[in-house]
Image 1 (cartoon, rainbow, N blue to C red):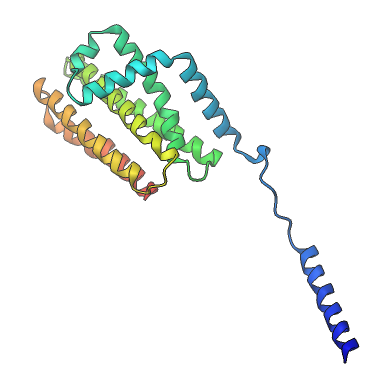
Image 2: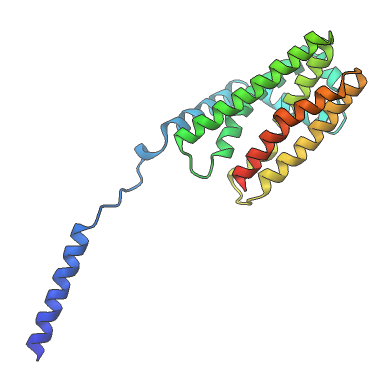
Length: 221
């Protein structure tokens, strides 16, 4: 009886070893498996921050002061150093936002798609503002709309940085909606003060702003 039990145990053990040996090997996470594209984007952001840290700090202060109405958009437009700092910071914000939106999986292909979509989105916005300024002969209003866009881009990026460290699913969607509300209010005031057609503003929102924000919120939620 004991010999039979030992023989059965031996057969079970050999069968288990065969299952283990035939199983597919699980690759260990190595440095090489980390997405190269993500690494390049992170390196670019770090180098940009090191080279232009003064401009980024200045642009951050300018943007938050503008949001809380301590600094007008006209004052930013009239100050070349403030405007230059805001331009530098807004360039950095695009890849940082792409990393934030793709932070869950860090897929290089997804990161490229998101980065390309954001670049195209902001390029279309800049083109629409310039076109409107040329058609309506109001380049000053077009410049203010562009500055308003960059101010809210910087504020949104700074406030979204905690998403790298905290795992709150609704943090970025709620932040996007809050920043969008502030952006729309300021943009509407620019249109109204320069007597621009509100219909153009409405069509612009329906065609570009609202679908984009809805798509981002849908992806995150």
